[in-house]
Image (tube, rainbow, N blue to C red):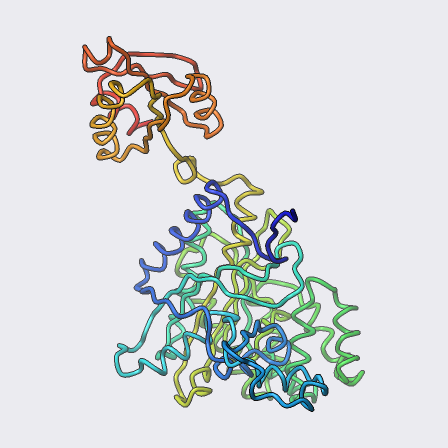
Length: 454
């Protein structure tokens, strides 16, 4: 018989891994709530018309499409089948797709529920998304995003607070990060000043790969995209710009002085950086003029976060989008948001071994089962322990003690309790510390007090 398997780019999570993942989600959830964000959920699948055309050509290719139910070939002619035009067939056979991110479903939600929402509307959402991507280290086909967005406000205070959220979350995790910031208006200004305003998308896509392929790789990609040699030459000082955030802003302001959109981006970035400086962030904020974020819907500030002690891709991304809801017939609603990559954060916390003990521990105490009489004595005391918040269990079967002790070891249960004739007579328990091997007789109340502080 063939051993069952799961699709490439997906994973099972063990109880230990789920404890760690819940620690991540709960930490992010708590920080979002501190800033007034409230949780929503949307369906795993959306209509394809909601998803298509929102992520650029690359993104459209990565959408998982769902075959219509029933006789999905009913409306397809033989000619269409033999033509094998994938896009045409997909349009005929699939009305739905799995969501690619949480931002587009959020925009759809806002438009559908516009009359019920109090603006500005701050929401967070922690759910899985799917991408028909080539799986590789740190990149999965099914993964969770932890988004926070605020819509209905143009204020740059939102950007500042999102940077504070990022900083607070990583302080709680104990991960040292660098928060990178740029502005799409600066990038538009750069494209304008080098005479390639209509090629903003290929320029930003190429520049965004600076970390991965270096200046030579970026230049080769720009050349391939049909950017002129003169324009590429003009880009070089920007691509390799060094210095403090203020120095970089001064240089770029000089370059973009004749571009109104570029100067607007410089002004926004200056405000965000000077306001963030008042907030005593513990992690470094770096202006990175090559940061572009691949998605076409960003229109203002853009963010990305890199872990400093682990080699892995960005672990948070986000930015300002001024016209996302316009796609659904509600123009003029500005939004800004961030998304924590839970799967990558999971890998970083694992590599750095930063999980707090209480976040990942399972059962604290196991009762050994010696028989029915002993079980009848144990069960009310077990209820008392659980009532006090102690994670406790009884071995359900009457089997050899050695098997029960092996179970405790395998599950790394730190304490084991024994009940025999004497304990039942004295209303006590004998408890063994599995780490030290030490045994002592105790009452339930004493045990609760010691385990609560352990």
